[in-house]
Image 1 (tube, rainbow over the protein chains, first blue to last red):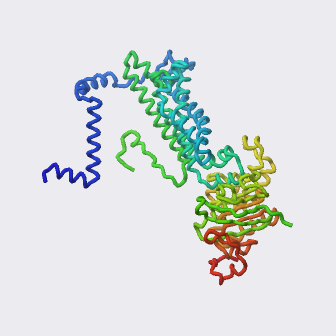
Image 2: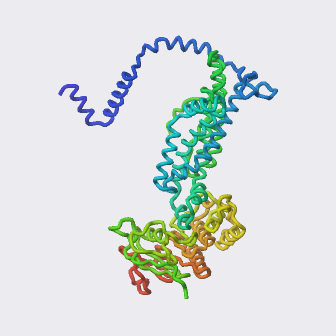
Length: 302
Length: 242
């Protein structure tokens, strides 16, 4: 038997080579289809050098100097309070907070309607489709749409993030509600209670810990994404980044803003993790990240 | 004379019309009576209880509660204590017991979570009568199995249904705790005229407090008499019955 025949024989016998072959084939097809050529990498090093030169060291004046052009105007007499980093980050947090609260208020009834243990199948199908439609459009696109509709500013950000939160949180919530034990709901049904009372007094309290934990997770998520939507004019720290990027290309200031954002997100993640831990099921083990793992990629797999 | 509250007539119970778990059920339960149902696991005792509670549709025949189909029964008139008790986890004893009062709360009280004084007093009284006054603010997850069963019974006492369905609510309890719970059930039946159907895996124990005993054998619910319950009958006799 020739070599090629032998290779095919091995491939036929073992699953792993088959899988590797499939992955390699799909990768090659994708590279050709996307017309990726390595010629583009020719200027990468010089571009990287220019970017590095213009970015480092980060210009932390964005944390100390007053931004007279802040929108909405900052009234405080203390300069750092009115700096782009602080004003932008506070706006991002406010957008994230409002959209999480509004998103939860709107998503909870939709989640109850989507949970098949609380609502009829046909209703669950309809509301799940609504939630999927809200989720399928990224928050950045929602922000673009609402910047056009209501104009540049935090309002567009709040509406965009709220819609995305409803879609995303609604899915998490109905899954948590469907995970509630059948028996308390049957006790309520045997009593003859209507669905809204079963949801209000039996299902939501039973899933309460998960629902609160998900809400906090969503707040973290909204803080991270609230930074991105600012790039299209929907308020927050992203809006200030965009101000420095276009047309001035002040990469050193942008890097300083990114560092501020990074530190804020890590702090919120840690706080949220501590709060969420209180609401997680007693038997559910969560792995608490260590500080070094937040700064460096972890090599642990579990 | 005691009024009949539950009547089953040639009722087929189960999930498949061709293969019902219980065939041709005929039953008549009066106020204040306790019926015990025994039978091997997997024969359909829980499905029987869930069907009488109106949670599983009947395959054929009829089960009526005070003359109307069970699934149209008056709000709060049927109480259920499922096998795993159906308590709202992570909520306090007080919260769980108060849930029994929900069927008679008006819209304003349920929307704004404002139970009336009568509801709160009934809750306190039920918690006291099951001996959990010192644990009324404790989460039900922290209670022992016996204490959780008392919470479920207290919830049923607050609800004060006319028919109480208890699915193995005495399971895995020590003899002393089981006796206490039996005493509570007997009191509910005698003093409030509640009709009770209880599923128990311990026939000897069930026969000590039930007015009538039934065994689910094959797909038939058979009435057991004194002889059937004797040690010579072949039915399993379990410790802690007396």
